[in-house]
Length: 75
Image (cartoon, rainbow, N blue to C red; front, side, top):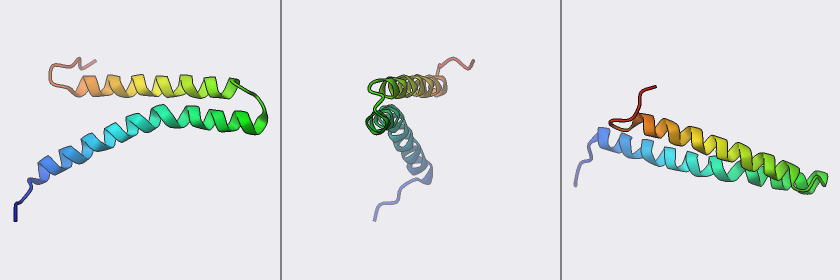
């Protein structure tokens, strides 16, 4: 049986968690906006707000990822 270094496994879980978080942060807000638009009949207002919120969330998360890369800006 092959043993796995716990540090490597933890790093893999951290990376997977960030990828899932990034993907869901882009998909969920527009989807919620779409369903709320359909429920309240406010077509495209909430969908657009959800899209904007999702994009802002994505950019913030990407910025954090870039900061943590070796040689990334620490500011």
